[in-house]
Amino acid sequence: MGPHGRGWAKQVIPEVKEVDVVGYVDTDPYALDALREVANVPAEKCFESMKEAIAATQPQAALITTALPSHVAVTKAALDAGLHVLIEKPFAPTLEAAQKLVDMAADRNLVLMVSQNYRFFPAPRAISALVREAKLGELFEVSIDFRRYSPGQGRHAIEEQPLLVDMSIHHFDLLRLILNRQPERIYCEAWSPEWATFGGPSVGVASIAFEGGVVVSYRGSWVTSGPVTPWAGEWRMEFEHGELFWTSKDDDGMLRDRVVVRSRNGKTRTLTLPEVRRTGPSGTLTEFANAIEMGREPETSGRENLGTIALVEAAVESATRHELVAISRSGERLAI
Image (tube, rainbow, N blue to C red; front, top):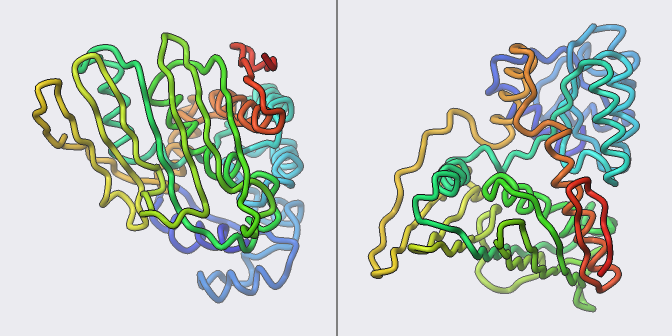
């Protein structure tokens, strides 16, 4: 029930009527006090341990918004208790740990879903369909720019990978959704200027080769003095018969979602985007509830998200070793 968890409690959960919250858990009583003040949560719904909360409320599922270091332990405890789990990204610190959680959920026939909420906006849904239907011919190149300024405070001051693991994972997951193919190799460099107050690299560039001959150029920064981008970044995608520019998820939600097509003859048009009933975290929570109700695998299941974890892990390894890293279909990595 830190700031992120309180945001879920106040802004997200009330929108999703398919879910009824029976309890809130934090080992820090001061965090629970803040929750009660911010979200008007009654004291009887607040607990200082998961075990106590489960015994008192008998829930069907758990939403986990803790920091990454406790993801595995808390997820294991929830699955052991027979609960379906929706968890913030990245759902585990390594691919090996992630696979174990996926196997654990499968053995118990439970839903394990990752809240990759950037997928649940109009622009990426439209782009994914356009690429799949090949309306502009063959896709061969993608460039992504993410620019934001953060002073490097709070958790960013202590995280080992505040860009690649905490932020770029969103863009890498969108790549997997939109391209609908697997990455084969990546070369990445990540660093921080001497004056930056981050716990780890705050700037990164990468070249990612996907199967089928698509190459992605990625640039991300937490310390830019340039114009900031929406949270999904600014994307340019080169096709056989034209170019796409698109962006998504600004500070005001879907209002800045935009897709512009430029044909080979220079004509441009702005696409009409599909309606998305609930965007962002509200969209992931809705998908989670529907998957449980219908007994199906959710779009961003833990199993499906293994590919995103593998790509992020390979990016960190490449940046650490300053080497090109190959990614096999099984997620195994090999420095080249």
